[in-house]
Length: 406
Image (cartoon, rainbow, N blue to C red; front, side, top):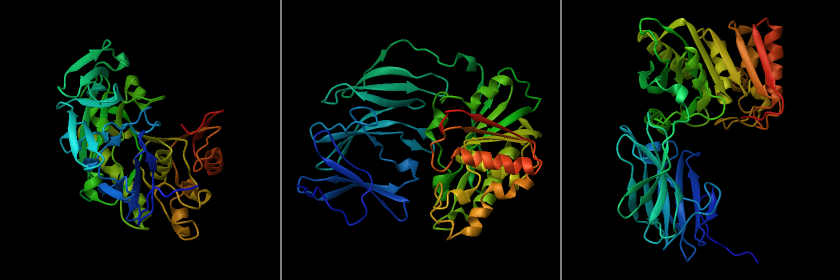
């Protein structure tokens, strides 16, 4: 027979149990911009453990440690669970591990990474939480595994230190910041090839993926990846640096707005962000305006196509696994909540497919032949190709058989 575990005045989001059977759940509020974390007490009442803004990475309580990576039950010992946080602030990350008491909701700090080092917990060694495994890295030091005693903070290295990307030795990497014309501070990671001549501007690749925010403060917060070793998964745009390109990797492209019409200013904010990035690159002698390419995957591909439509900032574009006709995702996309029938003009205005005749730069489209992401079926790229070819655009299409969205 069913039994009631708990009840909530608001909608229940993620729900689960610790390995000892304590229930926990989240609740979204204010149109998904706020999040609350609850612990279910033995009397089935829900106790608020933490609440804050979804996009406020500086005030994130962290992720609960699970028995089997990201999939197993949450580890519980002596009525405590562990939380891992990046500890982000304006000064960069100070990752830490906390123990949360499920009865009192008090927090005990077990470990804090030393300044200038990104150290994260990867495993729990014993049920009493006395020994954990961490991985320590920095912008210049590759990851290394440590055994850590939580009572004393003693670190014991495990295994030898090895560099998985020796080809990038000598490549310069900088965290850079610049300001958009509306005053929003943007940032990005700049890679420069080794032995470059500072007097000679370089061909440049800008790799993008916009993000939505309701608050300028949250939009200006920096990602933890800025302070970690090279984050390379699968095919990476960082490879371009080995061919002599400058690379501006993941510059912040914030789309700031509230409510249903938040995305209505997507295009001007997208273009303004890229204008600021290019001005920075040119004014600092890194790039010249005639040799800058823009590229992105998924929502970044969609944004790449829109930049070629709505600006003349780039010499070429590369779009991977994107969606280009938003009428084919009629019940919303990304963070857009309105349907096509509620915002018909907006859907067509946001679709590069409808403006294919306005692209005058060479364009490379790539897509997986078995893309399983519901918003980006392979049909999106094929139909966009037809529109581009029909309008005389210099376009190449590469479809990778059997490949999925990633």
